[in-house]
Image (cartoon, rainbow, N blue to C red; front, side, top):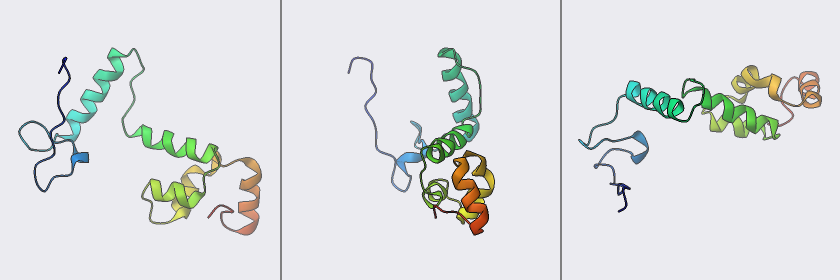
Length: 108
């Protein structure tokens, strides 16, 4: 197929989102990080941890005024207050003031 590999479904019992490798086992977390760094280097981009993309995603959602409850659900936080505590500085200033005066989040 012109150098492209055909996607193989994950072995039974394994999620296709868990990076199964050709042996049918899951790829090691360290190997995922190493591969990510290799891709960054080949692309000429600065090195950073793959986990940091989670924070980038959250800050972009908040900058776009996504509801705090939605962002919390995307990050799998048990409570929106956890998300609010970590990302309040990314909420537009007017909503921060409203949130403080109301004792909560105007978005959730």
